[in-house]
Length: 262
Ligand SMILES: NC(=O)C1=CN([C@@H]2O[C@H](COP(=O)(O)OP(=O)(O)OC[C@H]3O[C@@H](n4cnc5c(N)ncnc54)[C@H](O)[C@@H]3O)[C@@H](O)[C@H]2O)C=CC1
Ligand SMILES: O=C(O)C1=N[C@H](C(=O)O)C[C@H](O)C1
Image 1 (cartoon, rainbow, N blue to C red):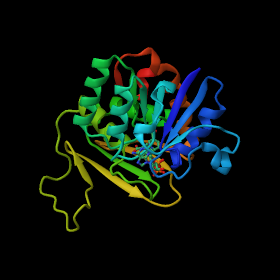
Image 2: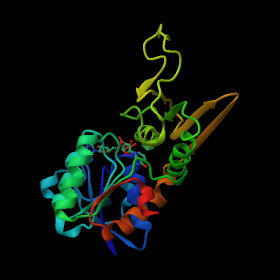
Image 3: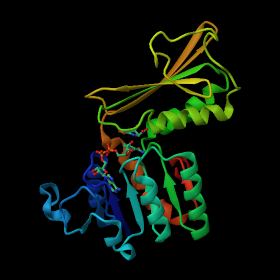
């Protein structure tokens, strides 16, 4: 039985993850954490009235000995501190929160290595998104001209999305250095051409009704290829989170990307 704490349990992903953990026979929910919670126990929430699980609002109060895996769906501002806290207490972090800077990831990898604790940072736990990133990396070998459009709900804090940024990083590993478009082009409205990641453009759409969607557009001589994935419901991330929580205890380093565990 894997003992799990869900960080960010009051949020959209935290709520869905808390339910998934409670419903999975391989898991025991031993804590939930959210500094913005007013509850002391999960059973104070109507959705979870039969679940006796301590709800923490301060890192210092967490019973670290009761936790094997820390699942984090919090905020770009808090994920580094949370992941470091988990690693330093011999708890395996499974991080879905986006917005970690490259130097923060490098530091967390060092801490994991030094303390021999397994952990995972996954920009996206949906299998459709994992496949999209792999297919896009493959296509970029043949189509170096690429633009990414990511579309999300309008409550999202970070832009571009972690998935779009990771897609661009994976593509840049195989793509020849290239500045796309007309070198003389000028934006008459700032931002019209989107963000620039090593010459690739990333466009972020935020609209109510959307959940999480991405298109990678490739253009070539007289042809084009579009790869698209859609998460219509947050349940789409749960099988990936469950796989990670089950397997991460077998590792002693911090991995990036769900594909490493599939
Ligand atoms: N990797 C993946 O597959 C996915 C990643 N995400 C990412 O997960 C994160 C959360 O997304 P949502 O649930 O939509 O956000 P949300 O805003 O609904 O929930 C975030 C929760 O974290 C809490 N929180 C804030 N500071 C905290 C701290 N220091 N420790 C613990 N909890 C804290 C907030 O009170 C809130 O309840 C975002 O970064 C998002 O991009 C979202 C969906 C899938
Ligand atoms: O905020 C979200 O909702 C999501 N965030 C992740 C990201 O930034 O890529 C994963 C997914 O797109 C949903």
